[in-house]
Amino acid sequence: MRHDFPPARSWYAASSIEGAAPQRVALAGEVRADVVVVGGGIAGCSAALHLAQRGYRTVLIEARFVGYGASGRSGGQTIFGFAAGQQQLKAQVGAQDARRLFDLSIEALDLTQALIREHGIACDYHANHVHVATKARHLTELAGWVRELNEEYGYTSARLLDAQALGEHVRSPRFLGGLIDSRSGHLHPLKYIQGLARAAEAAGAVIYESTPALEYRDGREVLVRTPAGAIRAPHLVLCGNVYLGRLAPAIARRILGVGTYIIATEPLAPALARKLLPSNAAIADINWILDYFRRSSDDRLLFGGRVSYSAFEPPRLTESMRRRMVRIFPELETTAVEYTWGGYLDITMSRAPDFGRLERNVFYLQGFSGHGMTLTALAGKLIAEAIAGTAERFDLFARLPHRDFPGGRALRRPSLVLAMLYYRVRDLL
Image (cartoon, rainbow, N blue to C red; front, side, top):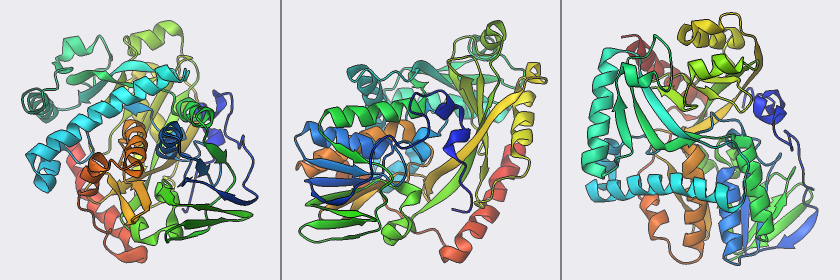
């Protein structure tokens, strides 16, 4: 990683009790377990929780601290479906299995809310998410999307909003209409992942922070080496995504870390916050380089957008993000920005998630491609099912084909930057 924003710069870190720092000891010495999980994001903590609930002695190791990566920095929007889109999934696995995958994405939404309820996770969850149109062709796209959801997938909680109805959720002259889904929503991602980690520990899992996995040796029993210790276990689960690197180069080549960024304003006057976002829904446009935003629990506007495929931080980041925000809400022209942060989401070539096995007893989860807030918790549950002997649902994801990004280590980023120019131009049309 050429740059990696310190998580302490985020509003999430400033507004959570644990903040952005290790809360647990590092591993020292050798331990034994039934399963070792690498990576303390939502996927890893969900896997640890569901494995521990099934009675497996589970050890999770995290190189820095729980929620360090995308899980603790993201836009916090919980939405249905996949970044790849259902048409692409149908082409890859057929209509019947594409429907099964879609239904699993809805189960992921329900699982997120169930975990919050069952474990008393105070993470500021709010229902409703709206995809908005910024141009006429977007209205046609949204109408086709709703028709597909209703007629092909029996998903009826998504419905169209005209410009007048959209005003009940977001008030900006930039938007022409939208698609609202009442089963989707938004939450405080760092509080959520911290709550999942505590739930996993309460179920019996052991979590070590400041404990990177240096290497692993597979076999009937897996050996994972760390700076001051080692773990032996019959099963290994890799949930490090863009941070795995040399630990598992075969799968690291299949994802790319894309920088994405968020700003948080100063607290708005309550009347202004409710004027701009009356229903407290999360909002995202459907451009390729999209803007997304929502209200925080203390009435800030959390505004996300911009991407960096080059791995370099964009110049004048806060200023450029602020301009995008004011283009949508001119009322915020004089509003101060108090936090700016970013991080990496992991994308695959197809934008479909990449789950699978490197060996019979070495599992991995990666490539959520911007849909990780809900899919990651489900992915951890599917890993627990697979290790317990019921792998059908996990194997459905594992059937999705994936390939390396072209160009090797030296050229894959420049190649992607050039390819993305097409989509940037398309957003302008």
